[in-house]
Length: 623
Image (tube, rainbow, N blue to C red; front, top):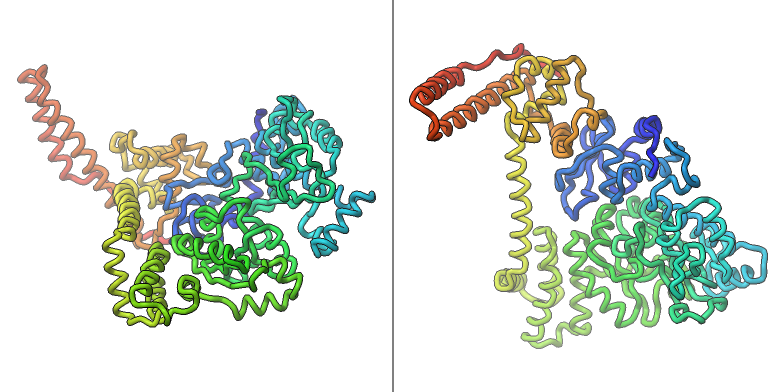
């Protein structure tokens, strides 16, 4: 892949602020001069991800990773550096310039970038065919408006398209634009028949189908759901299916995509909750009827990864599944997942035989609004009614006990002790049981099954690892690093006091400090925006990002803190040197005179260790 011009990289860095980039993935809240949110790299429940717009970098305390706009995209999208630059440039409308012009314009970009571009061009081409002035397009529009009961404005808003039987125009266009055969093969729009793997002889996967684009949270087209129509051929077995979805590709992972989240996330943030339905047609009907905070899983069962994505935007969801036994069963099966994800689920029942699409078509949006506002059930109430058949009072004591224990299993994954206690109290009320008895049974059940305890131990081990890591970092060198990053004049003074040999080059924290002090000693100084030019090792860069993100409020007197660091760093250096000299005494090759010199050196070093090195000017340095 050709190199992107350095001037282009610098232009991207100058024009794109990390807040604007990251806020498309994470719901960020102001925290001092920075912003924080849930980590986009892990399934955490307490925010530990920080963005610093003033210095244009991020740091994630849960994973220990930090970096600039390019690093964020590399981690989040799984791209290399060049691909991340292309990604950001495309997102913010910045032209990419390459050092070489070999190949077509498209072939100069990465395969992953080309797959994004191909899917976007396909969405435009399918839409063009939907709106074409020909009998086939007219019939498709009639199917959309009369059979599916959507408006033509809905089609425009949803970017609905049609895939004609003959796709030669699209393949010719892709070839003319210079897309590589590899990208065409991997984009998910085509497949090979009879072992013909020529990229531009591949067959269309979606012939004669209504095309529904699937977008990622950034709004980029990453795949399609294709609905069978009267024009769909049946000469290939898979074409008989009512719906055909894009296969998984480098840019489309079904277990990580929520359909319509790109359009819904703003409404979710405004309203404070998301509506979760089962299918794309249901989602589109809800969205076009004014319920813009609606999403659905993508061609697969709703799973933990989907909910981890949703958790970044809200703590509350409303489950709106089909009004039949299968819909109720689906809701029951999802409650433990929502509990584990730290999401509060409410359930809304639709009349038997209805799904969100058919209900709105028959009854209108106002009727759905009334159902959503008046028909919400808490997860506990829903489980009690479903499992008891609506007759909790008719159950024998033993059957009631069995029902309660089943519900314990669904509630146990809830990570909040306060929320869990509330659910247990509600369970006691809804089952007409004594609260103390239910709490006692839950405690006994939890102890016996040890399920909850195992989860607690895992979380505890994770926290302990984090705390141990933090203790390892929070030493004199790390504190000196924090001071240097926040107080330039103190850093200049430290550079004249701390000697290179005092710092261990094998320790990422100490070596990062050494390199920064060298820059100040040479009159260059350190700018965190030039991190890559100053620090080569990723471990060192991550530590510096972390140190810069630490709360500096506890440093009331930077000079005093720096002097304390100098003493401790020097003392550590002396002690390590003494330890090394003591080990030399065990060397059988060392003669009597050699041992005498070593012992003399140890004595002298112990005296030096008690004498603090010179310190910097003792004064309070304010921000």
